[in-house]
Image (cartoon, rainbow, N blue to C red; front, side, top):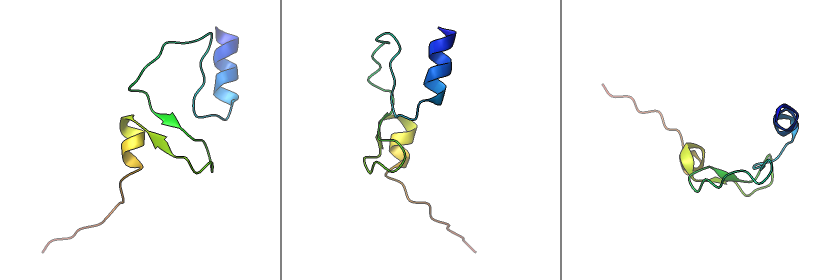
Amino acid sequence: DDTAIAFARQVQTGQLDINGGKYNPAAPFGGYKKSGIGRELGRIGFEEFLQVKSLQLP
């Protein structure tokens, strides 16, 4: 398992299953780097739809 985990940390991909893994429908998934696909699900997926705005009140 240690070798597989070390490998997974170095691979540049949005999702990687080790020996099939367990399916988690709530886990974020999607593109990596500049693939143009973006992410879906989870906090990371939610942030894809947000735009930061500063609001200041008197």
